[in-house]
Image 1: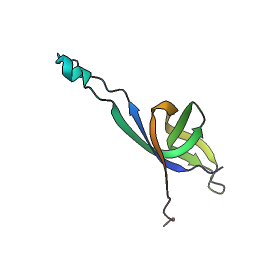
Image 2: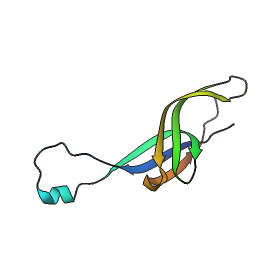
Image 3: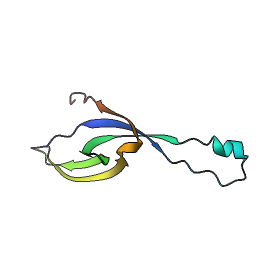
Length: 89
């Protein structure tokens, strides 16, 4: 099974530093723009899952284990771009 390598950009919550802040600055507080690069492991109507690390079978490239993965709600996703793989060296 082959998975695409993607760059996903999404909006996420951004906390304050907890200090006293002018109300106008609070109202103007922005969301964070986040990015992740990895294998697109899952995509459905609810979420996408991107994984950065994997262990594969050497002869088939089949994924045996994965790590460093994140599930992101589709409603948060701004863009999902497929990345090209450079030929092996």
